[in-house]
Length: 231
Image (cartoon, rainbow, N blue to C red; front, top):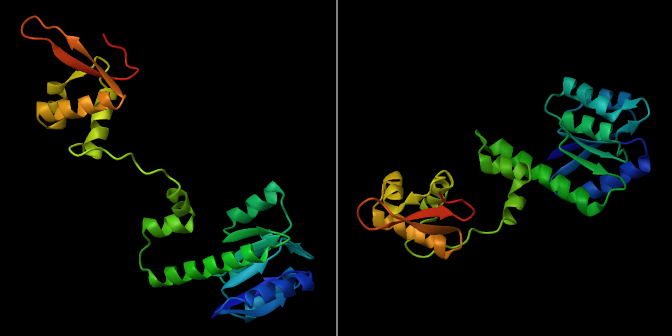
């Protein structure tokens, strides 16, 4: 059971938040405080996990109260629910490690989503001995952003995307252009394989080639990325 304390000097707002919490399973409001003094007294006498706190309370700022709460119970988390939109206030709250910051007037959907996220995060943390990157990505909101990334363009059979990217990088660093034989040596592949990738870049509009005439033998194609000047 998630034990929650509501710190709010307007009892009507506190009652609304309590009703919202009543819609979520596994959550119990164990107290409501109207001031910083009441909050500190309650935290000294009761074990809790989460505080829903306003910034503007009668005897001190909520941002100052965070450190007092954690001095008594270091593992208590805080969600700030306030009408305060001043940059300095918000920055201070964030630097003090609040789990979330909700601006009043609170919309129920936003409120419930925050509590559910907190519950899920706490549950996952309790089960893990080590934290992996996927957990942190989800925690910090990177997973949703990744969904909007366009998928990489599909390459045809015989063109490996990783090798193709390496060919691009090598061309980018070859200001004098590069031959298929030279590319093959850098890739550790055959001349034929290197030429296949180079010709693909030309067909794809990313590269171009010019004939280079040596002292002996037949001319050879020297490849460049589009935009690179040939010698």
